[in-house]
Length: 50
Image (cartoon, rainbow, N blue to C red; front, side):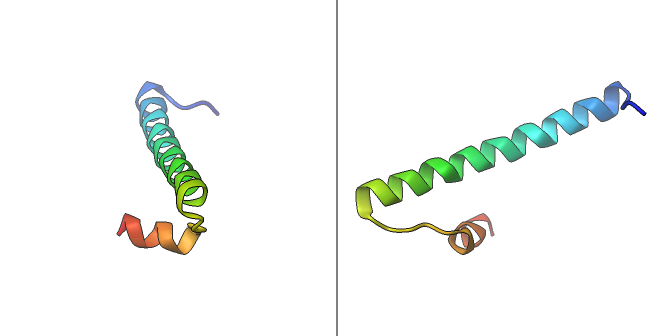
């Protein structure tokens, strides 16, 4: 079973948004660790999203 054009567009949009958020928090985690020696964990990320 393959998605139609509309469903495929929605899936691509969702995946792109998820990847953007993931990359943002990976960059933020690296920055905090390298510059401030702070371990930025998943619970901190969840607090930021709210």
